[in-house]
Image 1 (cartoon, each protein chain N blue to C red):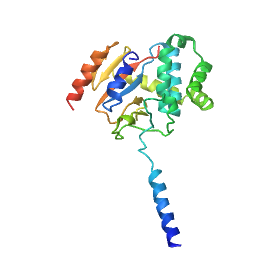
Image 2: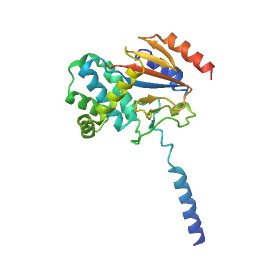
Image 3: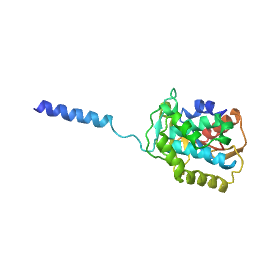
Image 4: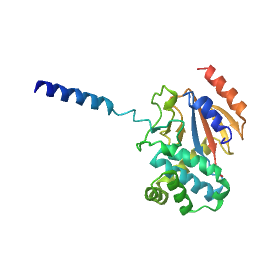
Length: 144
Length: 86
């Protein structure tokens, strides 16, 4: 999604026609859990920080396999988060409960692979190119 | 004295109008030229449903289910991205 996201934001999100929702999938054990927890804890301080973390985490994907608490706290701090508040969230279990609950819910919805996209109920499995999103979104908008 | 009192009332009205709270469902409005972290967002929790009627009002927020969104809460199309950061 990250490859097509900037264009989708320019063409549809900024004009108020599309809202992008990130739903976490925890398919790779603890590295998935802790990277998602880091985004959650940044987002608890400010949803804008969640999206900033979202972009950086995807960019640094290769580093996340061995990333630890300090790595994520430093990352969050570099984005503007309060490090102490972030660490409290990371350690508390509340954030962990939130991300695992969302992962449980996506399993209940029958979403098993990632990425999976849902555009107003139309589901696509796997990476999609911009043109696919464009056609699907335009069709959905035409139905409004 | 009456003039002073009128001025005070006028100022109070202006201050009240300027400081009226926004929709509490909006987390942060971020001009496109800024990075999200630079936007100075509010810390309150939020949910879907706040009307947004201008391009500059693209926002970052949180839905009632706990997921985070980017865009107008009442956008006609919702794109859910089920993804793993890995």
